[in-house]
Length: 121
Image (cartoon, rainbow, N blue to C red; front, side, top):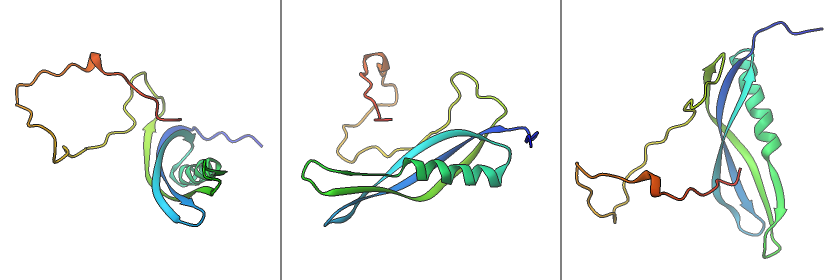
């Protein structure tokens, strides 16, 4: 049987617990995934499926077991029928570190000089 329901784009922020053998939970990790689904209930199910697929286990450099386990779907957002080039899918307010030097209102920034790193995705 063919499913004739229209699918739309969703994004989900997934939270993972990072557990180390002999230590327990050491941190959380978050991952943003973009996917298609026909409606909200199936989008949540798909987010859970994708999150479970991202769960992993391995041995760290010290030989201890490490497990990444999905703890929750933090956010689920409808992005629409199409994703256009340059579409923002995540934004996060961030506090200025307490030890940062003061920055004047009229400061000019130079983002072209930045050297991006990779997130590991």
